[in-house]
Each structure stands twice: as C-alpha cells, then as structure tokens.
Length: 316
Image (cartoon, rainbow, N blue to C red; front, top):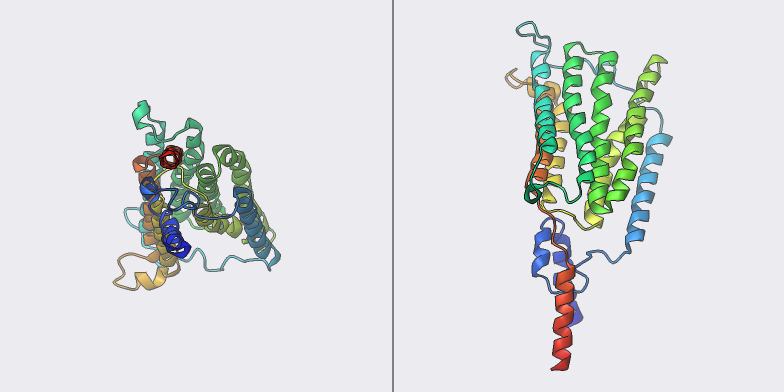
C-alpha cells in the first residue's frame, strides 16, 4: 500500500472526528499515525493562530466607522396587547429563555453521584453557570424591554446577553485548550462584555450611538468557537450539538431580520417572537448537550497497546 493510500483515509477521518470523536476508539495509530491530532500544527501554533485571527477581526470592527442603531429599532411589527400586557407575544415568548435558564441552573446545582457527574472537573461548571444565569436574566430583561421598548430598557436586555456569548467562549476554551485557560479568560471576557453595553449606552446619551464594541463582543465568539472546535481535540462527546445550536441561533437572527415579513403572513406571529423561541431552543440544545455528553476516552491506552503489539511483532 502506498503512502497516498494511507494518508487519504486518514485525512477524511480526521475531518470526521470533529463531528464523531468516538470513532477514535477504532483507529490504529500505526495505520493512521496523524489521526490522534487532525492538524499537523503544533498546539502553540494553533493558539497563536486563534489570537492573531481574533486581533484582526477586532481591528476590523473597531477601526471602521461607528455603527448607529437603526432609528426604527423599537418599532416591532407585532405590537398587539392582550390581557393588559403590551406587545404580548414578544413579552410572553421571552419566558422561554427564563425557562431554559432556570432549568439549566437547577440541573447544574443538583447534587449528583460520581457516576452521573456532568464535568470531569467541578470547576468546569463555572462558565456554564454564568451562561445560564445570563440566559435567565436575558429572558427577564427581554420581558422588561418589550413591555416598554426604549434605549433605557434595552440596556437591561443587552447587558445579560453578553454573559451568554462570553461565558460560552470561556467554556469552549476550557474544553478545547485547558480548564485553566478557560477559567483564566472567564472574568476578563465577562467584564469586556458588560463594558460593551455600558459603552453603547453612554454613546447614546451623547447623541452618537455606537454599536461597534457590542457587535464585536456579540459576534467574535461566534467566529472563534467553531475555530476552537476545529483546531483542538474534544474533551467530551456530542461536539455536533454546538453546530446544531449555532444553526438554531442563525435561524433566530434571520427571523429577527424578517420581523415584519413573517408577521404579514397571516398576522399571527412576528419574526421577533420566532427569534425568541429559536434563541431559547439554541440554548436548550447546549443544556441538553451537557446532560447527554460523555468524556472522550483517552488515546493513551490505544497508543501503548499499539506500541506493545509492534514490539511483539519485531521479537517474533
């Protein structure tokens, strides 16, 4: 068998490993030596690549002209009131976020036997506690905002939302690079996220609202997380759930942009209401992932076994 015959299936399987890491168990490192690490780059090189990419994206965001909030931002398509609640469906649909956040926090705080623990190390739970606390608070903030839409109430909607994206990034860093790195980045990321909303609110009071900083905090983690997943090996199974959650969130953003268009179809439900439900589904998917995933078995026993087999073959 030629080297090309060996490298091709290794290359295909190294890409597949991102979505089905459990197939590592059936891999012979002697046959596919590069399979344990799909990328030839050193770990330090991959980290530097991530940092350079983040710096470039941040520079592109912050060096561009200010991003003003649309003047009609608070003018939602569905403004119907029901049982004394203004903007009824936009308010009520925010409860989905409250439900997901509250349910996840209850599960994370629940005492579990050793065989049912959700994390290999208990400190890994911290970013997820911030994430689902942010989910719960975002739901409450969304209710407050949609009850009386204004920049003042929008502040309390956006503020906890930054907890979700920044703590999710910290959680993925913990799982892909190291727990120590993820926890080290958690506090700075949370502070940067909160500061972005404070800056936006301050800029609005000066009559020149600027969303650049907030947009960077919101969208940069959504670019970095897939890169981290693709460049670093998993600590747990069910990696594909991250991409499913991202898919639901993408649909939520599309629904938000099509607020009036979707509402015009029968006048039953607006795109913004659908956005709330899809965003809640995305976060529920992450919660479901935590409950169902398992630690990825170490490759070391396989490598040792393979080494022993080779030595026995040489002796024979």
